[in-house]
Length: 310
Image 1 (spheres, rainbow, N blue to C red):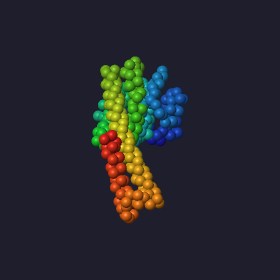
Image 2 (image 1 turned 135 degrees about the horizontal axis):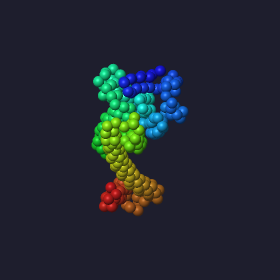
Image 3 (image 1 turned 60 degrees about the vertical axis):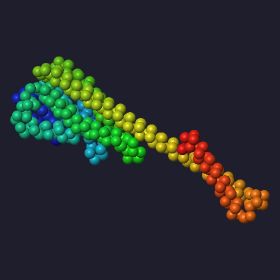
């Protein structure tokens, strides 16, 4: 049972990491939650949601988590139960910001007073504010990678293409994670429940909405930049491929011409054309045919040059 319970005079914070059967039994014995909510906290969610009941709110939020081993952004889920005198957080422990906050609130009186001195709504806001702030280093990392991608977009190799594809995938995942945050925060900002309201609560949540919008706008710009770099890379690659095919086509024409002349030389040998041309040896015939080959090939290359095919 990985459950930590922090008490103040008016508020209780219950934090559960990777809930097992014992944790679920504790929640069922101490809180009257809807059965569907218990199913949601056990299953991995792929979308955010907020459910409002008579005595509490149930919220599922996803936040970006950067897997350093795989260099991928993945969603980290946090479930919230918010009631009159309690807040329950359920997560997998991957976000160190949340884990460190819980340790500090449990260990230090001044930190506990700062975060739990008002009501459950203020504690919820404070946690969300920290989780949004921890998203910015990930966003900064993406922007640095985009700046580097802009320099490498003209390098036509498989590594560059792989970097652009991975960067694009991470941005898409980040956008998917952040897509519904504004909707959830708006509902929290305009909620009239007493346990959700505190002094200037609407203003506080509006600030979070602006933060979510700012992240969304940056991600939209990042997506456009990566797509532009990808299009540039693909256009250059296509141009190079067309150039190679053009050269190969010209070479094939030249080789075919040389082959034809060689066949003619063999034919001349068979009909003793040397006598008709006044040639006294096979060497003279070879020199003549070679000269003709050079003249024809040179003429073809000059024609290709004038046509700007070369």
